[in-house]
Image (cartoon, one colour):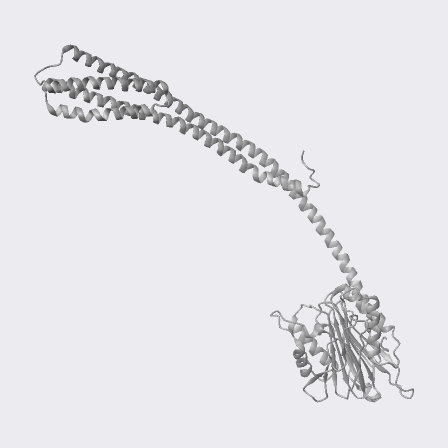
Length: 538
């Protein structure tokens, strides 16, 4: 019973395919076997014809020897020529051998074998008579054999000759019968072979057509189902993409909408995900002044990188954001925030997973230009002192990444961010950007981009992101975050004249240079903030 066209189980389809493949081979094998059997039968019949011809040839040869013997003896009796006697002796030894070969050839035929034995007996008796007669004739050269003896010898010879005639007649008859049987077998073989070939071809063509049509219908159904599934997958992918877009928008909403306006700082930021949502995170925290007499707020600067990419990293990034904003930190050092976030991540989010978060947190105090920082396994920021052509790493307070060990504790270090100093914070997506040949940008490439840029923070940011873009082209293999903090004058008048601060939040795969100019559709934010910008989000 044929399977339904709507669905064909894999085993049934495989069975049909095997049958279609092996059936012609099996049929051809059976046909070849039948043809070989017919050929064997034909060869068998032809072999019997050949055997009969050999018997006839050997019988004629033996009869010829017998005639030679008779001619030699008669000639000797009449002429007494010793040459004829010598020829008789040579032929006499050959005749019994020929008769034995003849008997061996017809050993499979009892009647002919009996005739051969009878001929051998008569020939033996005749040879005995001839030998006696010749012995007497040699002893008495002038004497002649008696007429009765001559007649007796002739009668024996005629009798032997008649036996040969009967023997050969039977063999001729058998040869004709066997030749006729062989001819008939040949025609029957050809006829049966042709009939079998036609039958097998008809059966195979009919069966092959039926099975191929079934396979064709199955393939057509499979293509239809595959097309429907592809459309469904495309719809699901679109739905998933929409969801990932929403996740990405939610994630980007957790980032600062505006850059903070802080006395003595020029700030620029660039953020780009490798997918719709990413695991990089940066944030700013406006903290109260160190004294009530000073109205200049301190600034907390946080940059973090969640291990991995995509939605899972984005979720852990959001968790990190929530934990960081739940920490009360008015007068506490940066290391306390990292301790707090690490403990919360270990206790509730990363203890059963291999995920972790690298982070660098610093607090800038404009009252004394002090920058206090702590690092949890993050890439050490690069610091360029004013007027210097070398960069140093902020690596004095390193600890384990967040979420690895609950018992981890973090230290803090302090430096002065003087006027003209430039601090570049980044995630590993910047230095690990690589070209088609597999060459990485590395810290050296980032330093080169920083050194060749103009001193303003926005120019440094654009130079670094351009270097990344030149390395990777349109490929964004990892999330990329870059923060540039530059020390500037801290008077109110100079603050009003300070360079405008830039915030760039990019969609996945966008060109940072184009986004910074506001040219990329779909970017969440690409703007240059004026002095009248609102207070940054905390």
